[in-house]
Structures are given as C-alpha cells and as structure tokens.
Image 1: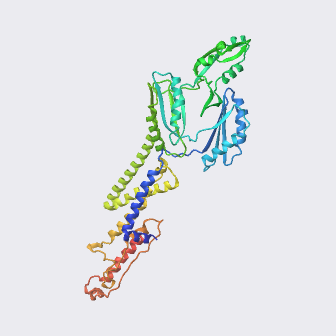
Image 2: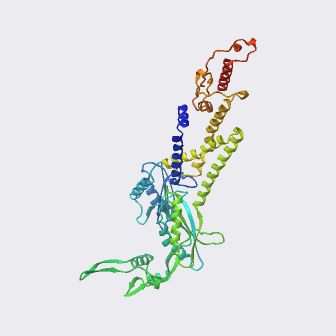
Image 3: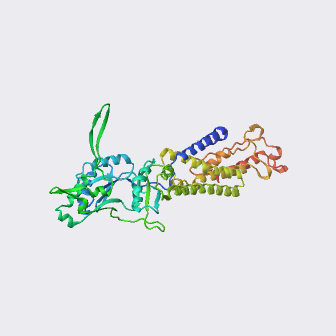
Length: 498
C-alpha cells in the first residue's frame, strides 16, 4: 500500500501538487471559520435558578423557596447533581446536567418544573443567563465628574444594558458599583400613631396611586378618541400628595406622616479601580458557544453608537477585552510554528547537508496544521491554546525526518566506491548494465518506522559469461562482472539487514 502511494505521488506530480493546494485552501477557509478563544470552555451544562424574596431571612428562604424548588427539579432527566444556597432575600439553585445535554433543552425543562413548585406568590424565580464561567469578554467603567453616582448607575441600568443586549452573542450585562436609585418614604412613627395608621396602609396607598388606567374609546365622527388615565408618579411631589386615608373628611397625605426623598438601596459592596474609590462597572457576558472575536467586534461597534447617547460629562472607559488574550494565544502558536520549522531546517541542513530535504520536512508542519484545522471545523472544536497546543510539531516531523534521512542514505549508496555508480535500473538486462536495483522510496518507507509495513528489498542480478581472466585467477586477471555484481548485492543485503 505504501509503495503504491509513493509510486502514485512520484509519477502523478500534478495531481499531488493539486491535492496539496486544495488542502492548503481548505485549511485556510476552515481556520477563518473557527471560533478563536483563549482557552476551552470545559464548564458543565448548568442552569441557574435565581429567586428574589425581599425582606425574608435565610431560614425562611431555604424552607419555603429553595427546598420547594429542589423537590421539583430533582425529577428532570440527565441531571447529575444540584447545588443551592440561601441568603437574606435570595435563593440560588444550580442544576448540573450530563455532558452533551443541549443547553436550550435543559433550560426548557427547568423552566417547566419551577412553574409547578409551591412557593410564595411574591417570590419570583427566574433563570440565570446562558453564559459560562469564562463568558466575561469585555469590561468597562462609567465615570463622571458632574453627575451623581446614583444617576450614573441608573444610566447604566436603564440605557447601556438595553443597548449592549442588542449585540448578537451577548447573553447579559452585569452591573457593579454605585447604588440602585430609589424613591424613599421616611415615615415618622409618632405621626403614624397620631393618625392611627399602619405601614400596610401606606404601602397599599402608594402602590394603588402609582399606575395608569386604561379605558375604552369615544367615537367622534370617523375618528375614535382613546380614554386613558395617567397616574404614574413623576416626582417626589407626586408621592407627597398621595392620600393614605381620610379622617372625618380630612385627607391624610404622605407628607403628613413622613418625608420623601431620593436615595439608594442597601449596598452590599463597592467597586474601586486605581485611585477611584467608587465607580460604576459593566461586564459583558458572552452566550455559550459564540465566537468571542465576533462578539467583541459587535460590542465595540455598539460602544461607538452609545457614545452619542451619553450625557455631557459621562465617559465610558474600557479596561479589559478578551481579544487581547486571544491575540496572544494565536501569536504564541504562530511563533511556535515558525520556530519549529526553522529548527527543523537548520538541524536537517547540518546533518543531511541537503537544504532541499530540510525544506521538504519543514513543509509538513504547516500542511499538518491546515489539515488539523479542517477536522476541527468539522467537529466544531474552537481554536484555543489547548487545542492548538496539542498539535505537537515534534511528532509531526518525526516520521518525515526518518523517511527523508533514509531516502537520502539510499541515494548516497547508489554511488559505488572508486567513483563507480550503480547502473540505471531501467536499462536492458541483457547488456549487463542492470545488476542491482534499490528503489529508494520503497526501501526508505520500509525501513523508516516500525509502524510502517516493511517493503522487500528488490535485487536484480544477471549472470554473464565470465572472461578467461576472471575464470583463472592465476593469470592475474581482475575480478570479473560476476564478482563485482555479487559484491554489490551483498552490500545491498547487509544494508537492508542493518
């Protein structure tokens, strides 16, 4: 089989070169389609169930929310294990599935089960974003010298998050720092007691007076006028004028029992960077399976559009981008490729004294790499430091080095001592010119590696009538053709046996 392949490659050079060019083109196209990332995503298939139940202790959250949800989630197919924790006002359940489970199928199954759980009505479970632990591809900060930090955080929550989620491949935006803007009512307990009111009455009154009402329509000729009641709170003054109760015909408003102001929710952390102690940060999460390069390019284009939406004095400053790490990875692989090819050329040039053979061996490195790109594209394996680093250049050139060295050795053995040269194997056998034929390619392939099937040594000898001088050594004659032919044949057999 090996002899036939070598024979075909040597005699069908045009087809061989065409196949090599086709392999090169296919490898280049496959590499352009490969997702390039810094390291592989080996995270398990995971679905996070996050439930917010404000104002309740961890024990109540665990008993009434977490355990109830886990009871329903345990019956899902392909679930390997479930992990959960409960803190004040929050329950987080992590459901892990077996390898190979479809991400969207697993999320659908979890979504169906959490709807069947018996949990409090004001506890709202929701699924976490479809992103892995290595999904952070871009980070930025919002800084302003003129706008209050709480307003900067509101700009991040209500404007920037919405714009970044429009980018294809972005799963979610995580905001850090600042404080969540709130309209707060500070109730005076003495006044509340004086008017004989409760906090529940205040809550219900504020909630009932902060909504719009929809009506029907009024026909006016060929037109129709929509009836709509506007009741949303627009300012702190609107909140102060909300009527909580009426005592003897006198309304009791919010301003009569307390004060209204703008503040922030209770903060559990703070973000600092360099010399700034309190900043607002945004983290762009990439959806699992997406190409980091395409996602980052889309984020940068969106940033150029967002710059026009920012108020005066607000700056968006990126400080981390995954493409830097990806570029470093690709540069490392290319450097190893160039260094490996250069080292092979230098060593083979020193030991074989043949620059052409050295370049032939070095050519196997890029061709093997392009061949690997084709199958990586077919299998959906992304290009990263692990997948590209697993392509060992030393193993790639090992067989080529041994084959080339053996072929060069057999080419040198075709020159006999004393300036004689082995005759052309294609010459006429009756002329006595073709005594021994060592097919270099076949012999090299047979002797190069134990993994290759050994090819037999082909020897062709012809007995020619000896001359009188050769028949009678006593007459001082020189060794005849038969002696010379037997001597050369013995050298070939010993070379084969060695």
